[in-house]
Length: 414
Image (cartoon, rainbow, N blue to C red; front, side, top):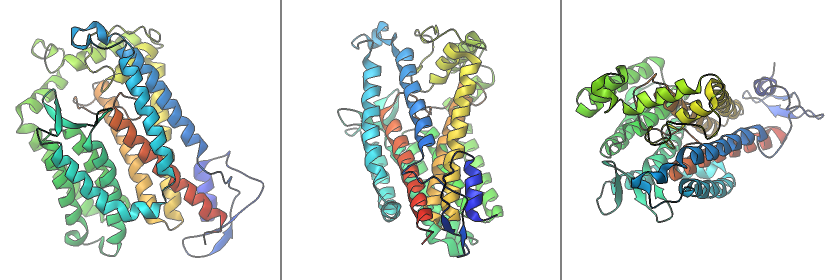
């Protein structure tokens, strides 16, 4: 089976067109391909993304509509968070359309500079006169119309930098000190700045993105597992040496304990109550009780709990299926690019798949009580301007990669 035929089989039926196109394989031979429909972009990927965005918009409104009844938010209208989220979606869509116009060659040249820019912003956010502090964490820079979170840009910047780094170091990828150590040092610098905010959740995502790209780029398996062991030990030490992180672990292990139920285990216990109330088919849209000032951060980190209460097990499984499909599709676009001898775009696409899939996995695990509580939003759905913006930028880059792949196949790989 030719490379192109394998690619079509990965994407499944529904991509056929009456005219077969020649495709140049990675070995340089030109072969007749199984027919491929040459659209400007992956319509299915766009459709699933829009479905998640619209569902998220509805759920943010449902989860936040009663918040002005709380004296803390009494100055807001009931539609305040809906309108802010709608503005964020509008901005993200406009930026995504613009990003789609940028060739991947430009992103490859910009990768080191974007990484440096993200480091500068991570430093600036720690300054009292620049960064905005919320609940003891200094993670945001106020832009007036929105609060921008530099850690979200850092995820994207590290992703591009790691992909560019692996392309440049491909000849020495088997050598630890020349291939792995410099990238590990770069991630460590980002980690120090993120932990100063503190934002351990973002550091976890960035570490997994970087490690995933190193692994997919062909780093020796023994070196990869050695790095993984060091990272796990490092995160374990962070928890062991931090009293409040350690309390979160104990609360996760037994959220119903009287000592935790009104403290660190409060969010988790009420999240589990929400899922319990939802049962199989849920209590119906808008019928959640836990969002009525019982479940903190119901419109951000714990949006899935409201979905589980209002749509039940069926709704959660549908959402899980959408994220699994989305992640798989993005990874396959990356595989397609690599099969066409486009290493940088391929690693970027697969890095985006790792980012979206891993963050969704962590958020769902936290909401369901399978993982310790961690402040990570549900991609594309939770309230948060900078998170939605950077998710859309990343997906626009993936669509651009797919678009360039289609052009390359149409031209016979030349």
